[in-house]
Image 1: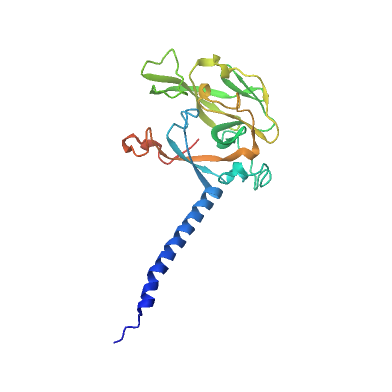
Image 2: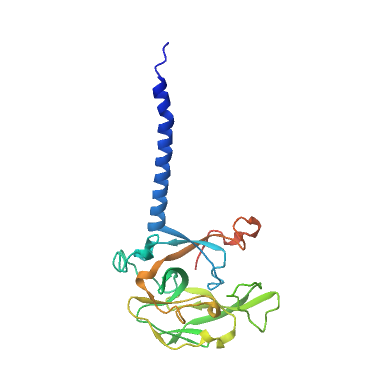
Length: 264
């Protein structure tokens, strides 16, 4: 029986296998790029401004399609000219109470995550720590306090009357917005912190008003952040994928109870 496989043909096979590997890698990178651009973007929580809804060390999925697409939907989109893709493609109006990732208006490369409380045309004011929307206070209900160990995080303000040198306590409330969206907010300093009494803000058309759930520890629309243009929205925070109190490889610090939890 003769062998029809010549040495030349046998030598070609490794080249074909290498080419297949390269093509597979390219296809995988393209799929990942499309996934990140069109569908979901990973995001990690670097600060405590959204406690106790989101904790430092939470890793999230953010849906890019929720509000349509702008230049900020693209990787490094802040480098593109203003108005690229128009105002937004396939725009869908966000809802009050959504937790949203957006680009800071004055620093286009910086991501922020806050809760949307003011829609275009709304009048927003905070009085003695209570959010007022269009002249009406939102409903709040006090629940058990939020307790955590004291750390060196700058955003960790604590209730001075109830905290200890090792334990940080913040008063916790359920806040219900006019569209019946209920969520948790924290109050560390009582109703007389600088951000607990504001002037009146009238939200312009095409812009939004955001606040952090950790009300005494959030740089948001009440202060230097100001209003956020529609174009700056990146996407809606959907789910905490994983969570860790330390470095990701420190598996003993993983917060398993937060894995795969929906964000409210």
